[in-house]
Every structure is written in structure tokens, then in C-alpha cells.
Image (cartoon, rainbow, N blue to C red; front, side, top):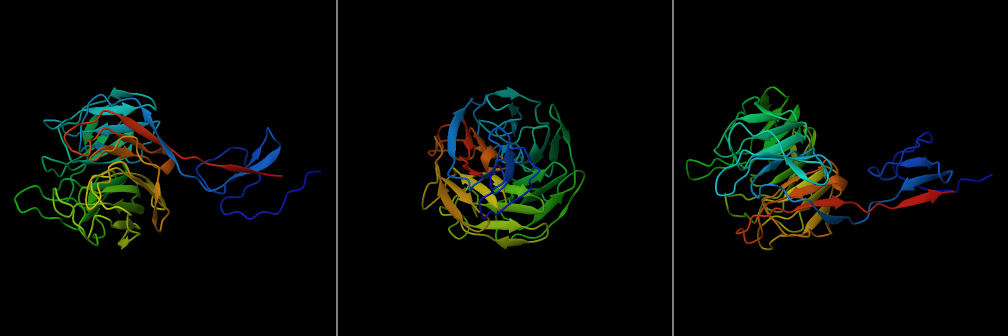
Length: 334
């Protein structure tokens, strides 16, 4: 009779499980083909791969933060003018979805492909719009009228924070946070420092925001590396990004996130990718095409998707799409 060897493991242990699960480190299942128990070890460095081009090249547009690389959603943005077009991704190619009620850029996004949420944007608006998989409708009005906010969560449990007033000059950067319950917005915990042109991941009760420009169009050296964690009530400081920047892409959860692309100083992030473990950031595989102001989404690090945006010179709008896949190793327990 085969004997189980001695082992030490962190994670889920359920001897009745027979389904492989690559999203949970330490998850164990019975491998029926080998009649042995298997467990996933720590994920290794991932890799980006090229996928189908988006239909309309654009920048400063939103994605459904809880989407992924098999069911993505992007909406709004700007070319020479503001856009209302929506596109849906099926894991290989993009197709047209229902248009936003108004053209917007600088909007934030939450939700999924079939339950999306557009938050704020320019022209500076208090409106939120809800997507049902085919068309948009008006949701509850936000408390504050801001653009370039950071948004994440689901259509019925979303969070919007940061942003700035686009008029009158000089711009201001409120510290407000708002929470959405699918019907109405209410005030949440105030930010520690200002945040605009940042990115967010996670949920309303376990969120992460990182990267920023403290002034519209200019990176602030004190804030562009900051990571902020939200517990459903208040914000606290997380580990700083290795390279600061704004207009980044992001995906994942509060304890397992990716940051990629972006623009800023002293280093132009361009194609670099960083991975967060809930405490600190480490370097990961670079994007194939450097970009900023792209649309990104992914509710797990292994399902990240980034589309379009502009090149590092800001002079060229991109069509290309990339997917991030984790290289995960498994071990057999005999």
C-alpha cells in the first residue's frame, strides 16, 4: 500500500477534493489519473502573451475591474474626441457592445462583462452607468463630481476614490471615497493622501489602490509609489511600488495584485510589471508593448488583461491586447 510521505503545506486541505485548482496556493486535490494527491506550490513568475487587437484604439478609458482574460469589458476613452463605444472580449477577440449614454474619458470601471459599472469621467460628471451585457442604463448619482477616479469592486458593491476636479482651475484633489450598493452612493473612509490617475483592484471591503499623479498631468514624487489598502471602513498604507508612476494598469486582489505599464518619473514605467503579496512589491515579467493610460482588468493575477492605451511618447494610440498567465508548478504527494 502506498504511504503518504511527511509534508508541510500552507493552504486548503480537503481530501475529498478531486478538482484541480490553480488559483489557490497549497490547494490539494486527488489526481485520479495518477491515483495520487497533488498540491500546487507557490506561483512562479508569469508571462504576457499577445492576443487579438481591440477594435478602436484609445486611451484614458475604463475596464470592468472584475473582468478577466476570458470575459473582458472596456468602455469610453478618447482619440481626438471623447468616445462612447463599448467592446467585449471573449478570450481571443473583441466585439462591439452597447454604447455608453454619453461619450466619456477618464472614467473608472468596476464589475464584470455582464454587470459592468462606469464611474465618473470627463466631461466631469457625477453619473454612474450600469451595463447588463448588452446596454447601459443610468445608475445612482455620485456624491462628488470628479474625473480620473480609481474604481473597483462589483456593480452592486463598488468603490470609487480619489480623482480631481477638472474645473475651475486650479485643480483640486479631494480625499473622498464613495461606496456603491447598486442603487446609491455613500461616503466611505477618507484617503491618506491624494490619488488621481491611479488604479485599483480588489473588493469594496478588501481593496487596493496604487500609483498616482498628485497634480493633473504631473507626477508627484511623494505619492506616485504609494500603495493604499482599504478594509471597508478606512485606508492604511501598504508597501511602496518599486517604480512610481501614474496611468498604470492593475489586476488581482488586495493580497495578490499586479501593477503594469504606466508613465512617470524618475523612471518611465513603460513595460515593467510588479507583483504584490499583501506586504511588498517585486519585479515580474515585462509587458511585450510598453504603454500607459490603457484599460486593465482581472480579479486574479493569473487572469489579467490589458488593452490599447498609448505608447510611452503619448503620441501613438495602440490597438494591441495582452494577457498575463501565471506559471504554476505542482507537486505529487506519494
